Amino acid sequence: MTTLAAPAPSGGSRQLAGTRTLLRFALRRDRTLIPVWLAVNALMVLSMPNTLKNLYGTATERAALTHQLETNASFRALIGPVFDTSIGALTAWRVGVYAGALAAVMSLLIVVRHTRDEEESGRQELVASGMVGRRASLTAALLAAAVANAVLALLVTAGLSAQGAAGALSFGLGLAATGMVFATTAAIVAQLTQSARLARGLTAAVLGTAFVLRAAGDAATDEGSSVPTWVSPLGWLENLRSFAGERWWVLLLFAAAVTAQGALAYALAGRRDLGMSFLPTRPGPPTGRIGTAAGLAWRLQRGGVLGWSAGFLLAGVVHGGLTDGAADLVRDNDNARQIFERMGGHSGLTDAFLASMVGMLGLIAALFVVASVLRLHGEETSGRAEPVLACAVGRLRWAASHLAIAFGGSALIMLLAGLGFAVGYGRQTGPILVACLVQLPAVWVIGGAAVLLYGTAPRLAPAAWGIAGAVLLIGWVGPALDAPQPVLDLSPFGHLPKLPGGGMEWGPVLALTGLAAALVAAGLAGLRRRDIVGS
Image 1: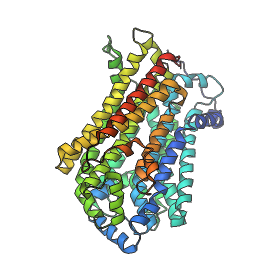
Image 2: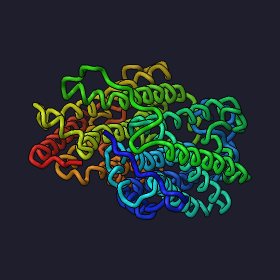
Image 3: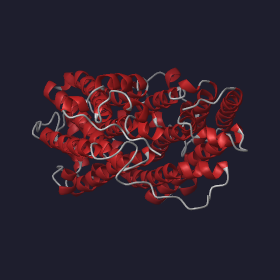
Image 4: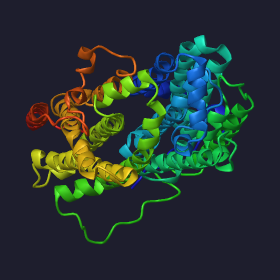
């Protein structure tokens, strides 16, 4: 039986009592999560001007690039339209949509973690028994998201100020505003659903819809004026036109959306009981259908696996369809060709592009395997693992059920990515499938590191996100900045053969697979010896 929160005292200030303390607690809990997300996002943005200067150093080269992009609907759908030929405008074009999406994901994770996650775990019930206002937790969660987005805006504004103060300020504010739009969206969804997992999934679905609407609108026009583009917050971000005659009034759209959604979230929070939701979970069957640890693990993780599978299949189709156009786009630019060769090998330009895109999907697959492995940590710290382990289920069998999904699921999504590439490109089906599967040993090394941290030092388990983020940065930014080879070698992906186009090298593949197995074995040995952490 769920204990209800005490009736909220009259007066707005009393309903927010304890907000400052909860905010400090939220920021302390997120002292790893927020810096990692900020570092990945800010470094991605701030590294781009130097990359673009190396690629398109003259006005003539930049003008030729923008002319080619204006006639390529596929690239507009993927990245967005170009509004000016300056380095700043090209930076906003190249990373704007993806930096905005990263800010949105960071924000929704923060808000759901400090609202619905807290209620689902039962901690909010304990907090509510003290002198804490009814809306204090929601306010603290939104303020934590606001702090993270404000820091992102400051970093981006300061880092891009050399390209133009006004453009840097508008771009920084646009990224922060995009994050806050999805923070308030997550706040609404957290009131509607009774599961943190469902709240994150539904908010991510809203973000995916926003991306699709923007992509459809941008494919239709080359100036961002399509109706679907204006329906999407990601479309508002590009229509700020940072470094290209800023449209400051677009920020009013963000402000209106944040205000309206925030007001709705507060209204819903005041009308429901603690632990309840407006869309309650459907009751299960009268008799249980899950009789094994593996069945339970699949039930808990199937939504994530299916979502990632659909995303990787679609990404493969899109990037496969862009292959010929991308090769033509950089064929006459020596610097751009060299970057693709550093990422994808010194084979033909088309093969180098395919290899670089496959490598990028491998880097993203590392995020999936970390999230799936850390589901063990979530089950343990929430207290849900204890009832399972109290039955005739050993620790290793319980952990192996989740790890089979983590490592097997990564193989599935990379296989589907390869099939997507084959469909989109229409050629080299076998080599592309092999190239995708060759990424798995490096993905599994990152997963093995997550298992090691969880099994031996569970309090440090979230640091696995930092490892994945660092590898992502090395793989994404390193080749563009012409980083030294020892730096690139820090990533396990730097040791893989560059396929398709290059020769197959079994030595690194087998070595990385063995390293992943050793890390998993060490992590499971640590799990077997240590105590299980209660809720």
